[in-house]
Length: 348
Ligand code: NAD
Ligand code: UDP
Image (cartoon, rainbow, N blue to C red; front, side, top):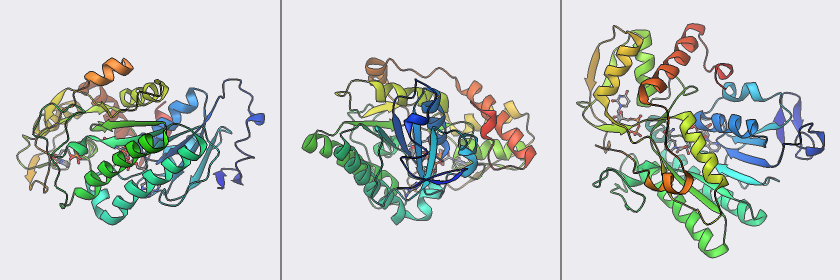
């Protein structure tokens, strides 16, 4: 596998050679698939801040170079443009598998590719982890619960998922990936960590990402109509990105028998109408709220039961929605004023 840095093409024994490191704290090398995306770029930052070397693998479909541009000159960081569906060869000590578009319009744009990314991507990271006997972390999702009939959702709930609808490529793809993870653990003793992420937001979401928080903020800041799908009575629980990444790190550091699945999300539950009102208030926007049709199979209600995360990881989210929204709005405000696609330098 070749790695790219601002200095050109480098090999694993070159740019990632630990003998070149000045810091004693550089302990291990993490592979982050989907590392140029919203969550992946925050994770790369956090791992490097904690003293790791990071290899970011991404095909840049929904991720962007801007998200990782601030890391590219760091000798502890390398990036490789590759599809996670291709077999992986990398001399790394741990793997975080985040590669997959997360926004409904993006994952539905090419549903076959989404399913392949989930299933073949999981297989490839698992085979690498098994070969090297290293831990592998899977970014699963609250979508495995589908349109839940149990509320809030604990990890023991098997879900209520349409296997043939427009969301299925993502929901069933993530479910199949979880299956592969637990089969590898049972068959080969692979060291797995499976997290189920509930709606997470923050700086470095793309302005055209299509998910609700970024849509509403961009619409409010531009004075465009705020598009509520349906009547806005459906609920979601919104977690700020820094809280989520703290949960990832704690989970990876937890003992090997802690394999998950573990829900990570903020249990504060809001209707989409309440979210629109909050965004309008904080931005002081004059945008109108308009209602458009509700997408097929849009889940009615969603809130994580985070008892397990609290018990096993000592994790609870700390950043309330209003504070996280204010930070995210400040980011988008600068981004839109500057006419840029991403502003990695304004967040830690
Ligand atoms: P994102 O779209 O910003 O990031 C996904 C990244 O994966 C992008 O950089 C994209 O280019 C890359 N990618 C996509 N397909 C790939 C492929 N075949 N090979 C290599 N790279 C590929 O989304 P995100 O919000 O950062 O989500 C990251 C992960 O977390 C995803 O797996 C997603 O399913 C999961 N997740 C996120 C949320 C959330 O609220 N943000 C919720 C549940 C699950
Ligand atoms: N939504 C909305 N307006 C938008 C985007 C989304 O009302 O511009 C709604 C969407 O129908 C869903 C909720 O907000 O009920 C969360 O949507 P998102 O795409 O962010 O995430 P997901 O549906 O995957 O939880």
